[in-house]
Image (cartoon, rainbow, N blue to C red; front, side, top):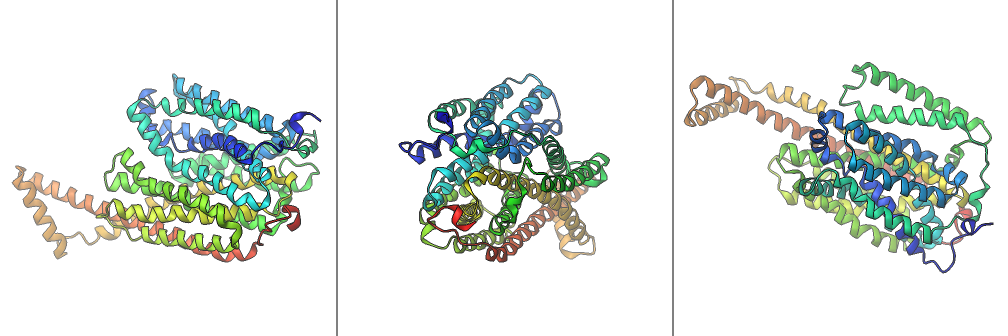
Length: 521
């Protein structure tokens, strides 16, 4: 047996291994959001519309989603260290090429390569961490790993805005190169394959891989472009949704039937793991949904510039930065299911607080609920990951972490699509309801109209122009209030979603601190 198929040498501190895999994971997760604020600059530089430029986001997410569930099988087939090295090298080179992109098609192709290489980084790093630490220290490992997964998406818009404004959108991609090089060096020095990685069959499940790729790709495009294209009012969105649904059920039937599937779905027969995956999908819906809503409120309603909006989002990252390591340190002293329950309750409460915002809010009205949510994410993320993975055998860990991360990302895509759709629909409904009261027969509306008319007249407008300006100003006020009420409703729905998660915790078993995962299987 070669050196690379031996277990990790005893003299390598597991925290060195943790830093090695954390660098690449942080870089990959950062790239899911860092490009968002640069889209107008990319569009202008490459002479395309902002809508066309959004394919730089969609192409990355689609490629990422396809590779994620395949990671466990690919790691077994090629070797985990080889797979990790290939992913980091490919991601780093693709990042550099994205920065050099002379046209949109070139950039989209590079983003597809970047997403495909990055898809394996999260589950591989999580599997390596869970195996490198003894069961009693896994909470600490997941606390450290969770920092990257939770903080990176929030840091992305701030870093992206600063790099774009200070230098160029191309630096959003160049920034990955030095991080990637350090990650490559540390991975080559400190990561080794465990002995059981090479037990995988050499037979390739071509049908399974094909169906998975098409099903995930079509679903991700539907989720990413649905709201923009009016969902099923657009023929090709409907077609892709039907294709995705049919292939999904065919894939499930096929993978459960064959002897050597590309994804082992039988891992879901474990009640604790399957419940954890379900809760993680709901968590993805809630958390990714709010990361879209809050910047929209700050920028569209309150007029914050991109960098200031990014800074206003930072308290959640700050709270997570404090909460994750603390929870990791103390988790094994308490029942992690109780900590998970407390975290979900606090998350739900902060969403309820955000549902009570109005147009005259200040910075601190956003700061404290987000800081509290950041702290509570440690209470949610670390226990949920540790409990879910506790019953999984080490040789199945790569497969289990792949599915776990896929479901979180798909939940995030569903959450982003859902909140975007609800915001549009709710705002239109609220405009109709509020606008119905803006009539000459409503005393408040009439008084407001007279004051605005007088204001514009005093500014030098003639009677007809002042009348039009007053009406436009009134409609603008209605739109703003309708939009704020829509955001309030969505936050309330998301708070309700967290409450609905609570009963499912009862289905999960408490992980044993010692004895390893086998003791619970």
